[in-house]
Image (cartoon, rainbow, N blue to C red; front, side, top):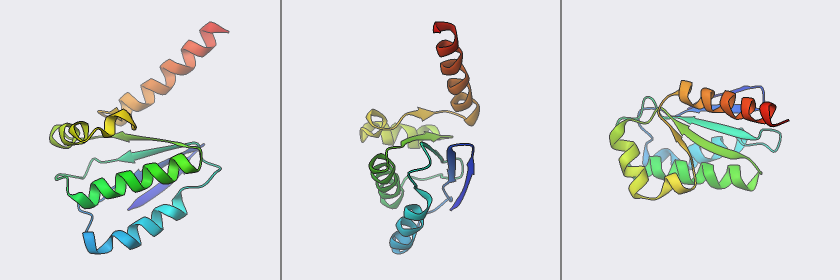
Length: 119
């Protein structure tokens, strides 16, 4: 799993497969990524082809940690099969999805422009 921070946003790239036997190690690494100094986390699912229970576990674990730290999690670059499965599980009610990183970034610009226009 690759993670980097830009401004106050952490970007986390999920590998193509998350092995169930490595979940404990993965969750521990996530614990080190989530900090109170970061308010937003972007989970990049570009390389994920199949949705296994270990990936769902990773998403839920990360959401719980981010929420407990006072942050917000969103997911980008979902393929249509995974997006459909996550919506059926109701995850989209807690975590916003964006089709691409550009859609995520445009959301940020649009929100900032709306706030500036309202002032």
